Length: 305
Image (cartoon, rainbow, N blue to C red; front, top):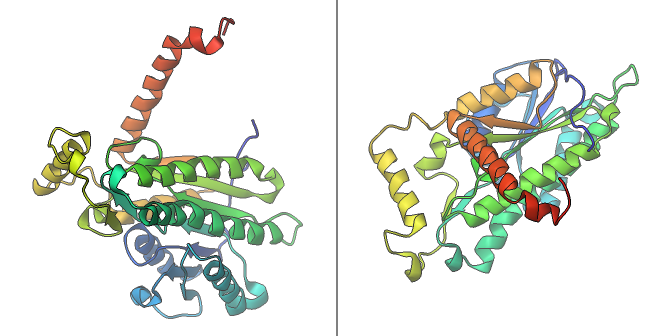
């Protein structure tokens, strides 16, 4: 199996960051952090660029309209960035953050709802990633080495574990995980292009009504004993209790992503963030190992494993 992210990565002092979904949440937190560092360049994007008014207007900050579901919109954003900086344009860090969650009873989700979710979460991430790879691959240092870069694809606990009532959100995040791992293994080590799958657990803004869509309730799933209703009741009870200690601040995630980019070490392929996702991922892995042992005889189909 081809290794990934094989070399320590050094963030250039004049690095350019491109971030999608900067109108709120994690994207807004990362954009705010990068904008506070005068030596860095920022390409902040959102479907509606008026939502980026919180950012100052300087030559180092470019605010663009970008709809990741539209190939022409992605092309236009990259062209605008190149036109803005001309021959000085380079791309060092990309954060694919644009997305929303679709929750509700899977049986009631419409064709439009399910396709829109996957188009945004998966195909949007794929479009921006591959355009970024092309730019990073063509950018070399004076010494003849590739400048390279880091691409952070925002997944979630939802990309590791499937829970009731969010099937298409899980499908999109699982797709991002598998696709990102495959693409990471396609990169030649000399290119210095690193891919990191970021897996936060619950983020506070996600539970405040931002970036969420809901499929219509299905009458067959309304009973409180149904798994999705039980999960909803558990989550709502936690919110009403006013705790939220297990939810992560977007600013903390932003600071961790920046630290991974600048620390001068190898970039991890996966970056689980938060005690909840770490514990649940570990429990899933241990459970899977147990299942493998139980099925060892069947999996080998009579052969020694």
